[in-house]
Length: 411
Image (cartoon, rainbow, N blue to C red; front, side, top):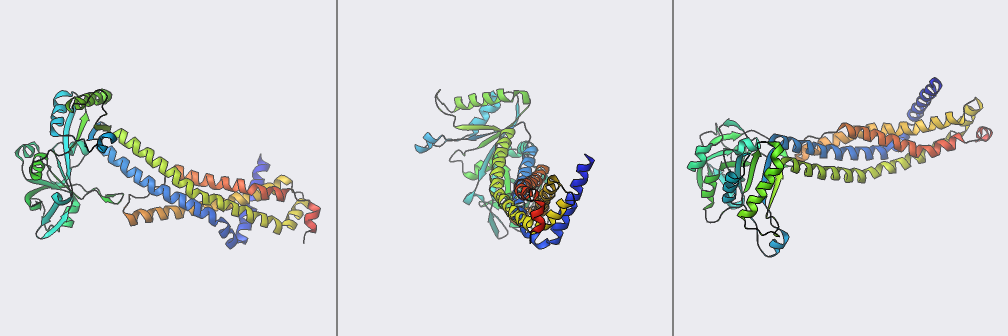
């Protein structure tokens, strides 16, 4: 065992000397591996950073949160029929489903109804009409001022909680709390500024305005019942499946759906949404890593080609080593370790370049900070070492099988 360890050390030393002696050629040899590993790490770091950010968002929401949204089956949509959830659905859920709390309506306004202005500055944004329970349900808390309360809900007060980006978009001067902002031609008093969340996948999470739901309904004119989403918390996680069934029964009865009719709504928990997202991210990572990993294989072929050339160039050296007592295994080990050493060197350089590229892409596109998980580091080095072993075995065998007499005569 000690003798084997000594041979490995000597083979590694010889490999490093050979690589150093032909530095530029060694760099060109490993270029394919460098590009491949850098591409894989760059893709993985960006995707994993995005995934970590989304997971953090779901963690803030809580695992006991259920979201209900309208869903139009394909058959109904072809007939021009579109499903919706109304405030009467929320009332039914509140009164008929036990073991839930913070039942919250949410209606989102875009386009012409979401134009805001302040002292001559105008822009559009996302206006969200919701209840005072929204802050507990989705962990949206004010950094300054306050959130609207139950009294604001009931009294249809024209009060607003702004996302931090709104202050910059309409250039609000001084302390925004207590000032007024126009939304679709109606004036609202600013009572709170939400905590900053930053950008997610290029989307500004701070570009929004929260209004009391009753006020938002009045802003829309009340001519048509808006399609809302309903969020709620389950008091006992062990009852979550039973509560989901209760919700389904209440909504189907309230929508007069027949026994064979498909649901015109979707019920999802935060865990389910996160699991679906993670499955998508996992599949995307594997596909992208597989595609760019092809370049690592191309780099492996380049290494095998150069190693075969190296065996030819060092034929006399191999003959001398064998004449001095080196065994076939010694020669095999020397060239195999040299191939692996080249690939690992390429893997290390590729790892650094890949993380740098991922960080640059994330910074330039407004994506969450790039993250390289430990498994990706081990995968990069494992794949590099494996490439060296696979593509170095043929040149190593060729070197080991050289006849010492013929090798010494080689010119």
